Length: 221
Ligand code: PGA
Image (spheres, protein in one colour):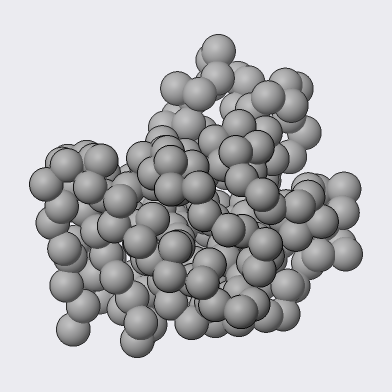
């Protein structure tokens, strides 16, 4: 059975996750899947501070909005602003689910060495919303009302939140050799506990993580 490790502070949450990334960067060749959103910000800050060598790794992002009006809201922009612009990674080693190139990158068909995840209040991981198949591959999805509402804090209004996104499927996510799930805030606690300790069900996509044998879960209030 998995356990949720309670972390004292948000800074420490980022530091724990950064430790896992740092260890992976030391491999002769590695691949890492990264999330966006507010939770991983302290991890990115810590990674930038550590001035690590990124030349042996290839990165992938979990998801990307479609039909964005403002490119500064893209996860491409987010990753460059929060991480890539401050590291020695070369741009041909960073992969995004741009919907224009989506068909080419569709099923990455790889087992990443590490996948860092957040969790949505409805139990989504990446943009795999409740009810989707556990066998899902990378694909275009419609965002749920809850997700659009939750993410409207990053936009002027909910109308500006895209209706669709491209997301890595649960299958490629689960094929990662190691998964680290990060959750911050009391609003995530209930769904996190449900996902990890209760029934494994497609109604709560994150519950599939119970089937992973190399999973770490870090939570802070
Ligand atoms: P958050 O998003 O870190 O912004 O709360 C997590 C998620 O929705 O996966």
